[in-house]
Length: 114
Image (cartoon, rainbow, N blue to C red; front, side, top):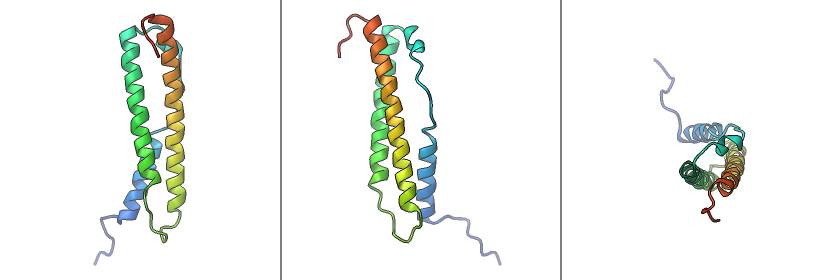
């Protein structure tokens, strides 16, 4: 008789989801030099992509922060806090990237206004 279950419990799945979401924000550096070679259209498109990523990351962070974990789940609140902190750090990196794109766009595209 096999007593091992092939399905994980919902709290275990939730923690695994949090860890995977947190690992998606591994550190990347912002290289302003790569934006100097882009056209205005490419800069605008990239700026839109970064803005979308900031919004999606903020939504994810909010969902994680508002997740109710049962008290019996040991370490659940620490995992939740760690994932929320990783998402916050990702938002900070994306904002730095956004600032670099805005600066490059302001130098290259005279018609761009902020």
